[in-house]
Length: 259
Image 1 (cartoon, rainbow, N blue to C red):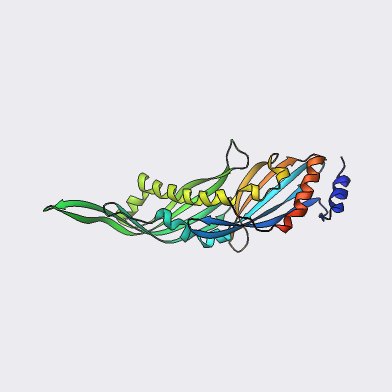
Image 2: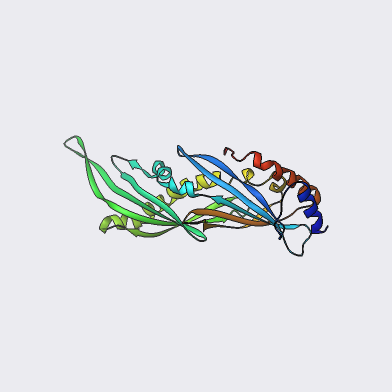
């Protein structure tokens, strides 16, 4: 079926196409409840015809995560802050993430102490073993799950650790450094899972047939963090008609609540 059919179908339904047969997926703002914080992400994208193909289309999706960036400190605190009388005491001081395509570079500043409890003359005595301030960098890279073509997970890698003396050695140790990485990754992954709930972005006519091929963090402008995803899809005529109807109705519902 020639592209002129798509042009006639879409323009008849009142949808304007660019000259390269690109169809916009209108943006939707999704409020996310994350660790007691109200965070919003905006998702949208486009569908464009692949030159030389009659029914193959390229799908590009974007998730604006700048509000997540602004609230990162509050999001991470419930996961990292702790005050164990006879163990670790961690107070998160600052947290930030910036795009470093295709990854995001997270910088966490914290105060860390390790305490031990001993008994002396029948009483428990708390003794600080080590303490101080540290700066930990973690690189997080979005990747697609192999068994689910639209599921995004994070691969995390601890980078530089800036802390003096015994505190630096402790933070660089396998157990402590890995525990920090795992807690940070879990917290960010939880937010990402909600922000990449593609059912809120992808029209139903595409959900069952779309397979993503690549995901990455990018600079959305002025250092804002944006997640991009791209894939290809074959859209038969019947599904294209349903897709057009769904996109035509979409602007009436610009805000949805993530489940």
